[in-house]
Each structure stands twice: as C-alpha cells, then as structure tokens.
Length: 584
Image (cartoon, rainbow, N blue to C red):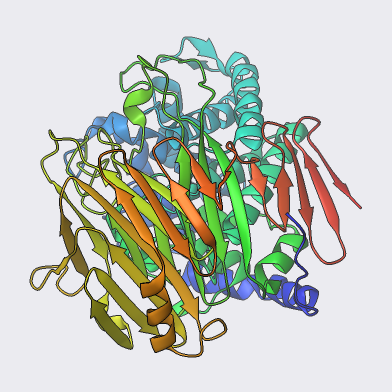
C-alpha cells in the first residue's frame, strides 16, 4: 500500500515521548509496589519491589515461595504444571537482575536454582506463548548453570543452551515470515514480550539478542498500526471476555502507555508488564513517529500462520500446515474496526484442526471516546477446558460457525450454527447508554456518538437484554443462520445523522441462508459479497493470503522474513534471514 505521510510534528512528538518514558515507567511501577505479597502467584510483584529495593525481606520470601511451585498446591486449585512456565520466566528475571547486585538472599538463590535443576517446568499447555516461555526460560537457565545437570531433561546446561538457542532462532524467524498464530493477542502478547525482553537483557549470544530486539520492534509496530490511542482494535487471537468488552482490561493497554503514552492513564486497570518496566529495551524512534504521527485513515492487512499443536501431553510436534488467518484493520482518528477476513480450514483429518478459532475475537469496532465503547457480534458458547475457548463473548472452538469480511468502514458477518450447538442465537455487544442518540427502524439499529454514526443490520431481527449483567449492553438475535452488517460514517461524509440513516436504508442487502451468501451494496464502498469460500469487492475476488504485513507504514511479502518500515524521512529494513537492520 502507498505510504501515507505522518504529521509534520511526528519526530517532535516521538522525541518528547522518548524523553517522558522514564516518568511513565515510574508511574506504572509505583502502582505495583506493595508489602503484602500473599497474592504474588508467579513472583512478578516481588520483582517490582526489588527493582526499587523495597520490601526486600518480603520479596525474597515471595520468590522462595514461587520457586517452590511444585511443592505446594495451586492456590486456586489448578494443575501446577499448567502455569509452571509463568513462574519460570519471572524467576529468570529475578535471578539475572537482582543476584548480581546483592538483592537476592542466599536461600532465594538456592531455591531458584533448585526449581530449574530438579523440576520439569514445561507447561502441559502447548500454545504459542507457553512454548516460548518454556524455551526462553530453559535457555537462560542453561546459560546460568552450564555445568549443572537439569535432572528432568537428563542434560547439562551447556548442551541445553545450544539446543534451545537453535529452537529460539527458528521459532522467531518463522514468525517473522508467517506471523504469530496467537495473533495480536491483547491477553497473551505481554507473555511473548516478556520472553523477548529477557533474551534482550540477559542472553550472551549477540545474534539472539539482536533477533529478540528486532522481533520486539516488529511486535510493537504491528500493535501500533492496529491501535487507536492505545486501544488494540479489530480482530484478535486468544483474548478473554473482560478484554473483549473493555480495552482497559487488556495486558497491552498499560504496555502501550509505557512505550508511547495514551489518553487513558487513569483508566488503566491492570499492572504493566514488569519486565518492560525493568528492561533496557526501547522501541526504535521510527515506531514512536508512526504511533504519534498518524492523522489519516488507512488499511492494515496481515497474514498469520495456523497454530499446529495437539491437545495432548507430552507434546507431539506436528507438521506446519500451509493455511493462514487473514486479518484486516481500518484505522481512522475517530474509530478503528476490522475482522478476520478469511481463515483457511485445516486439512481434512488434521490433528491440529481442533484448535481452530480458539478464544478468537473475529471482528470489532472501537470508538475513541471510551475504552469500553466497543461493538461486535458473536455466537456464544461454553466449550473447552476453561469454558472460554468458545465462550460467551469470545472464541468459537469446536464450532466455527462464523464468516467475516471487512472493507474499510464496513464489516459483514454471517453465521451458520450447527444443530448440535446448545445455543441457536447470536448476540451483539452494544453499550446503549454510552451513545448520544439511538434510533431503531425494523432490523436496523442506528447509533450516534459525537460525530460518528453507526448502523447495525441484523437479518433475523433482535431484542435488547433488559436485565442481568449485560442489560442495555447486549442485543440477541435468534436463528441458526443469520447475518450482521455494520457500517460506520461521520460528519465528514454525511451532513447529519438523519442523512446517514436514510442513506443506509437505501443500501441493498441480500442474504441467502441456504447457500450462505451475503451481499451488500454500500454507498461508500460499493458492492461487497461473501460466501464461505471467497470475498469480492465490486465483482473482483479478494486474494488470500495477504502479505505478512501490508499497510502504509510496514510491508512484508508473505513468508519473506524481510520487513520494510517507512516514516516521513526514513526507511528501515528488518531482515530476519540475515538478522540485520538496514537504514536508508
């Protein structure tokens, strides 16, 4: 896509954000300092305290308790093998950051050493973030104890160090080429970032340090391109209901504030990733310029690889399948929206196919005024280990009944719910009372917030939920086959809300629930059509897979491993094949 010029003051804004990074870091760190560490499950709160040399006795005790992870029952009754790697990565930072400066007591150091040398700390879960947590922790533990035997793995540290170094290189380069399967996860991206920060800060292998830094830049830029003032918009892989309903609940929300700042400082609800506060990493200035200098609407396309894992323990390595998940995001200074425009099916009989749509958030519209001003449709369920893999507001594991298509300010969705599913209806999150004006006409719902206008067409009609947790925040629509169309406009395109409504009502909609075909003639975007296998715009078929990244500020041809980043005066090329960064 063509480059869209950033604001003339982009470099000035970037320099100011870099200068004020220390203040934001101190603010976020101070919120985490506390003496009572009874709820410090993995050791992160102790790390926060020790980074300011506060409550050292209590913090050492907490780290000892965390390092005895396998010796005590899980405080919430869960299998300790599920989250052992969360503890492993926190102990790595504690060990490397605080032992050299004398903040760890001898008992703490010995307990951490015992954790790594005498236990198998690989999680029973094999998802992307868990595997990276394990391999990063084991690499850095092996680097720390090269002559010691890691009893659970029957190898000395020196041997594991070489083995894990090769795994990590392959792991990161592959994802630079094909994207992350837990794509743009505002719940699990912080875990990935934590691993990369530990490698950046503590690995002795300069090539691996460089690779970690490059991937950090790539992930931060990808997040920036899909974000509106810190709100990570559009579709996501693996998020939970609280995050789907409110950006302020996400782990990326304080992380974005730390690096780039945003306008919702007081709304930040969760702790910022302590590794990011403690780390020496800082995004490239060019990423700051893009984060703070965007003033024009643009499209950002991405392609992500299919996650190929089993649900069994021990882990069985599966061959990587060639399909992809294709994400489309439309950014404007007033709103951001997007969808999974097409997702390939796993091959017939695939052992990895069970994972499709796991905790996936398929489309989303977010407005700039409030962090919880979000609209999206979903088929609710309760399936999976936690019940959230196909949950009430996110995920479609074991069902896969939705199909989606976004084109700039329009998102279309259609559903074909299998008979065996418990719930034969869909719902839409619409926080009614947050809007300035609400109009209803037949199967259309019109909403106005300031000068942004929204239309929702629900083919089967709808009813508002009037009681319970989602009263006046949810509409439901019955039927196994259904369609939803969301179109957004503003006063730059329409003189007033009434004109917007009249225009939308004249747009042609056709839905064939038997053949699962949906078409919509938008006055702004033209003829949009979709079925289960293709998408067309004005009769022209949309080609998938998208490039790995394709937008005005970053581009990477599919499976190339070469990412070009552009700002007003700079072009930077990240070559993950050669592990180099070249500036022009």
